[in-house]
Image (cartoon, rainbow, N blue to C red; front, side, top):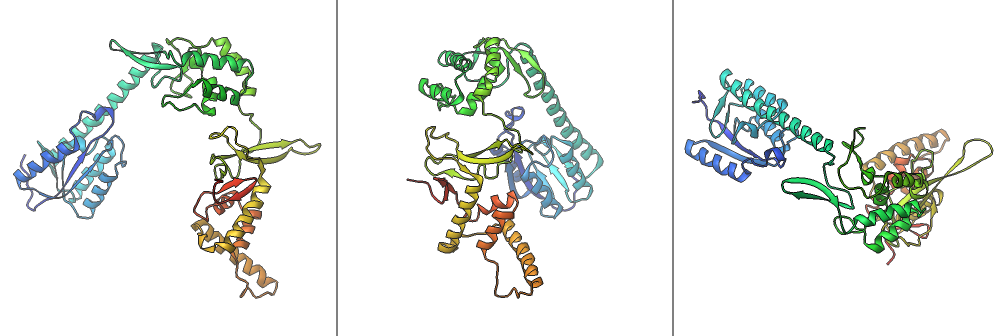
Length: 432
């Protein structure tokens, strides 16, 4: 269809390919650019810029390159789009609506594909909307078909996705099923038996490392993974899909444990899993520090001491998670001791290495606010605040005594590097 334009169109060549399964057969980006460049040369079209991205077009406003292209058209940088096919531009109603709206505003003069031209006239805009809506319909139908296929697979007893440790996925004569891993299946059964016999999580972890019960990448399984395996009903023949949906299926895969064994393990979980304490679970410095000895993560846990009257008293202790080194000897340190040590470390650094202090924006704002309050308090006491400037060390002590948890965590960021704990003290480097 010939365009009725009377002014030259300044085109942006837009090429897109999605990595999602429904578009894996789509023409590659390089091929799109090559073909459309040849077309532009043949038709004497002006291509000001070539833009490309690998992103799904199912959802509106999620493609950064396309969003920027629309903004540039609004600002007059481009007046046309050159692309392989309409579905390269839109597979959703939101992006399609913005394209048509730009045409209505006469900012987008033309969209040109390999075989069609869409200008600002009712018939061509209507055709563009039909083609893009057809692409959306295909997406929606494929989504429904995929869900139906997954549901049918579950009803046959085969859980979608990678099989858990102790099994592997097998393709045989065009069918896919789940079979027992001959190298690790019997070890999973033995792990459940150890849990029934009352062995705790770390003992099972040492045993798993010894017998080389590894994950798919060949690395030793971590303690958290052991806990997840011991409460996974897949091993006795049932699975929930999707997870947390409340929809359960009976599996067709071989069982590694009986249901009775599984239930006995759950009864032993109080000895296998970390004990859950009642309380706030708000551990102030969790994930902030690392162990100076093994460089593993420092974790925190709550303890509650019963009192004759009133609520139990809450105490928080920090210690090495012992993931990298199960035999790490770093001792526990209380939260009060850790806060005191952090204050001493900051005071030392302020005095010895002031150039290393770099206030975050949040701390700068907090320091300004605190300084104003402090000056007002001094004036009320007939004290001239001049000559009594607020020091960072003083502000730090205020935060550690009276600040919020967020402010205390922010204080640990002023050095721009990882902080460590060694022998209950904060330090700036691991122990060699």
